[in-house]
Length: 383
Image 1 (cartoon, one colour):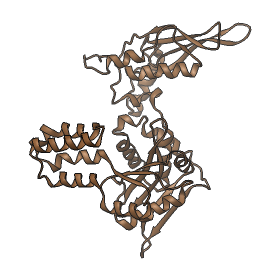
Image 2: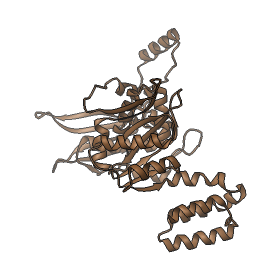
Image 3: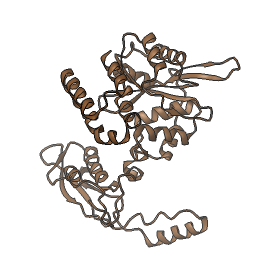
Image 4: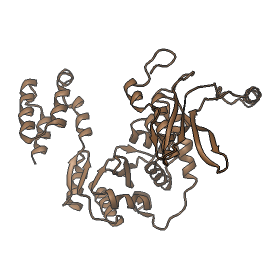
């Protein structure tokens, strides 16, 4: 799909797969709208519910229409009023909200069952579509997930400013376009916070009564750990405040493949004693035993702490951190010629024999047999 300048916005094959078809059936109105909204997201526009039809005598809903948010025409009086308001207040003009877009999907109640059937589908758009990096700004696609609400609540309790909370969410999601909402949405949820007696937190001060470390987990995080705490990912990448305290989220993955927060910490330094304290707090706070697997970066202090506090937990290093180091540990030209081979061997080898044979052959062909860092990585793999 192209914008009005001819630039490719969305992959046609993906849009085609999401496209509604006449006779397509849904169990509920909500399911039908979710489907159309997902299609709208792939195309680059916002969807909304529109007109309905009620059966006479019974007031039973028998038809529902979903349209582009820019369907219809903006009232001329409203346009003049908005223009006057903008000139007087100096606010940014938002442009026309309604431009007569014809895109829509209509569903009707089945006569033989409870389902809803697509009776009409129009894919015509008469306006510029949002690019993938802007789609999260459109109203029907702005969703604050439970994980993001939980993380924001925990960060707020640690007095971390909203602007820094948004930055943490951007890093976690891989960019602002992947958060799924805007700062205003996060603030609105933050205002609904209420104190909860089952909220767990611990902290320690130094000799001068300065905060050196703290850990917290809300009821939702603790419940998530009960169900999904068999694998834990621990990362201390983020520095979040002017005191250079390290933000350390402990996260996992639920049965939908979504990130869930188990707990969060602020640490004054990446020392073994800090990590020992943190892992002990995790065990005290959670309703089940230690995780079966923990994935971390290659921090030596963290490795020592895990061995001491979580001796029965299988410890593995994050593949993302390892692959990112190839660029700095290997000669630039050699890296460019061989990186994709290294990545393929590491990620796609199906047996130990296949990995070791391919690894030895690649080191020989690339003349990297004497590379100290690669030897260290191989030694860690063999432990």
